[in-house]
Length: 374
Image 1 (spheres, rainbow, N blue to C red):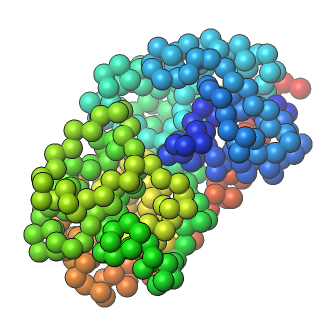
Image 2: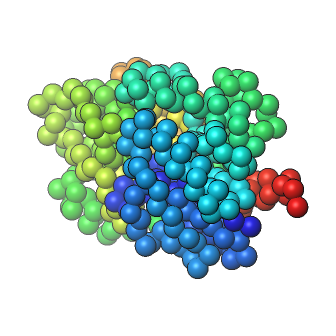
Image 3: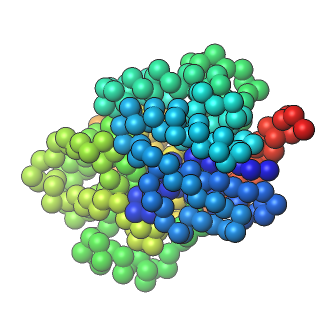
């Protein structure tokens, strides 16, 4: 069987979101299925680390998908021809994009529909592209994978998709995320925050991540806690960063940009708490990363987040800056709550495993193949 995979998000220096998801699943299904051939379609020169095993063939097709018009050319022309040329039996797209003009059976992963509910979070043309094409992608796909029950309900309701067509397969976290020793925590604080305690946010600097409200809340928190820092890890999603930051609170903020997992695991495991308050989310991998580290979580009470974190987090209204600040103050001041959340984080982390997720994706691919003409 020849399985095609959209690998355009496998970028060596920028594995965030879709890229991390693509890596964790693709690596496992390629390594665990030597009897099949996997053709990975890239839109630019690839890093050799993504050629996971001998049964992987990398194919680079142009143009690089940096603009909605280039999306259209890449998926509807270049990819269509490549699927024919490579004799692909089934195609899996981890970022939800599809080739509408191809007769090859498609499985797509749609992570969430924020662009439908908050179209102004994206540049105008990108938003238009998503809202025009994703309903078509969803209808064309033989199977849709999504990452939470919340997203499944949203996809089925918004696009009129039958529930049996959508399979929920939870994400997980890299196994490098773990509890750190006291010495490791001390060393990390000395390296990044001059020895100070800190809250952490991890994710792309996308409007829906609600970073502006997090900063406003942190400013309120800092009125009585001037030594604690807020570390924000991630890069700008659309090359725009219009955050409003006062001169006073700027001294307490640390923007790291994108960092490698070796540093991220140290930062996450050393944090006072993960502050993760997006107003829209399909899953929220940083939640599980924090759980693996056994640290506290402050999460928004919206969309999928209560489903994923359950009792391992303390929740706030992401639109209420005072509520966010109160929860930060509570976690910082109450050691009993911190210990309770840390214990529940480790317990909840056991429900998320990339090995299990990869097997479930593999099963969905095989189900499609079994329906093909012999």
